[in-house]
Length: 203
Image (cartoon, rainbow, N blue to C red; front, side, top):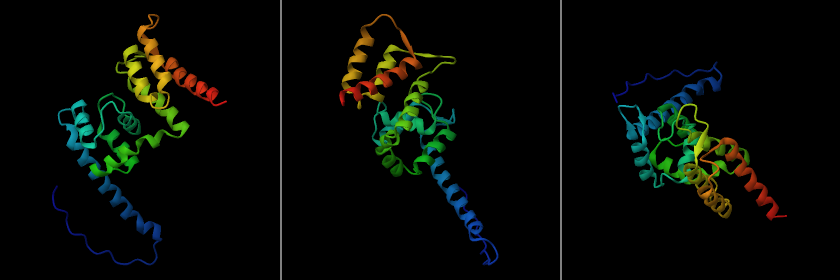
């Protein structure tokens, strides 16, 4: 980066509202934050694509000590509202890291450790749950996901909260012959059913 020119001292003002005087400082802080976020983005970017690709995500996972199949990586993609599986654009990266307040690698590592808290609120989890399905739609106009991927996704997203139910469901899906792929309606029904069964067990 080129060296910054020295700033001229700003004369004191007495007739300007203090909130207006504070605005440039806030703007400068935001600009510096995005510069750091962008620098972090560049560390993982495929320069020919101008985005983070699967290799970059693999390197990111290694740096933050999180496996690529960990639900936290999916939550991170959700926070970015990433559209294409396995890729992060600069705008998506900025959106996610700004939201997490992570503009350096140490801050991102710390944020990754607390990502599961982001979906503890029921409304947030339901939004994340729907996003997880959409994120796996890798083709244009695709409306369903193959059974193998559904089983993996179900284990990642619901396995920690409903381990026995997920195990039974995935085992059944693998041996049944009626469906080769499942839709969003099926996906939503899994969670709805698991929640109802959990409530019944506590009555």
